[in-house]
Image (cartoon, rainbow, N blue to C red; front, top):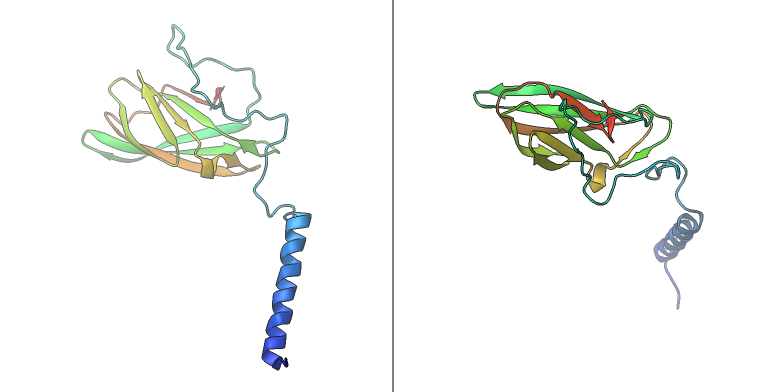
Length: 167
């Protein structure tokens, strides 16, 4: 059977694609092009809910862990009876971090009604925002933007931790 020039070129291109695909599968992704992975010494977010008890002063517990992540809180919009706020989590370290949890101690009367780019839990004035599967990795110098809508007065939180370290 005789093939046309076009069919021969298509077969050659298909063969070249197969070779490239095999090389990628065998050799793995090019370094820097893949999703960053946490260093073995870093601790990811807990898989079970973390219980944090308030101290008599109402402050979140202190930690002796190094400050790798920081969070910046800013009210973005206000209206009668409510507001929305944005948090920016930043990795200050030289290694990627897998998983983050921001805990805020909100003023009395503030109730978070919805959150974006984070899983939300709220109990007794404490708001917990956890990373989602698509934004769990924060590369060195990288940021994650998240936020929430709440009812009550738009006041800054009285306490803030990221991965149990003060913001």
